[in-house]
Image (cartoon, rainbow, N blue to C red; front, side, top):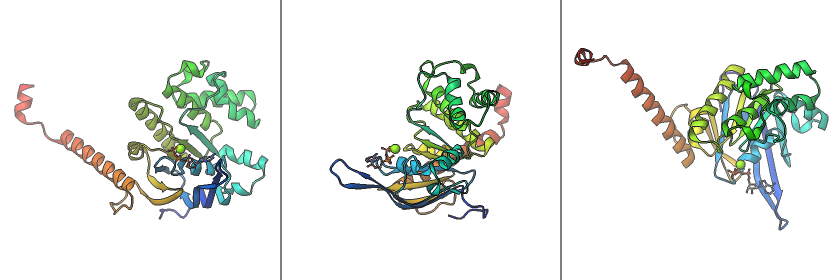
Length: 281
Ligand SMILES: Nc1ncnc2c1ncn2[C@@H]1O[C@H](COP(=O)(O)OP(=O)(O)OP(=O)(O)O)[C@@H](O)[C@H]1O
Ligand SMILES: [Mg+2]
């Protein structure tokens, strides 16, 4: 895929391969020899059927899954070549949020967000407190600082998870189906939040989703996975082209429909009001 700058990608997966051992002893190839690049500031979608390998591919980016073959580069470092301690430090560059939020239930919102700062031990109390409050303000949850996860709505829990992921100032945010446990209104608000984070902080976002409207609303690039391989990738609102996959065609159709709707709205807003209507107003 071409890119306007010659800057190296912020994420590069190079021939990564991951198999799992099945109960009957067979190996199952969840991700097969895949190469993928994501550029700085992008919002990159990973879509595909259930079992296509989306989550596994995402988890290879921060080495939650270690590839059996291939190399992983993030923010200029080869993660697959680092020692455990070095990897722990490098992971500060990579935040992650999940479908089920994964908050610590018996810890307050403050302590959840402070967690990644404390385990790293690089920040003193005052710094930690300031950063936690900054991140909660960013996601609009300052007043929930002393609440427990059980006292929050789904959308609020996901915002806490975002604040926690952003606390160490990562360059990359990995999102695994972050809206699939949320209703459509809350999904819209959360997508807006992710857009702002991408715009304001320049954080590169990689998002796994099976909801094509999420791709249409948020992503600039998308890769379609089938059986552990990327079968197609393109710029979401790039030039219309023949798409290889049904999912690719569906994303295109959604993008074109939204563009038409936006154009119609703009034309209506710009149309002169007929004199007759003014007279009766
Ligand atoms: N730890 C594991 N052990 C064995 N098989 C696994 C493991 N994790 C994933 N798999 C298998 O690898 C394949 C890809 O799984 P993955 O979770 O990446 O799919 P996915 O595209 O995220 O699917 P979904 O949309 O359902 O979340 C699936 O067939 C899955 O059963
Ligand atoms: Mg998954």
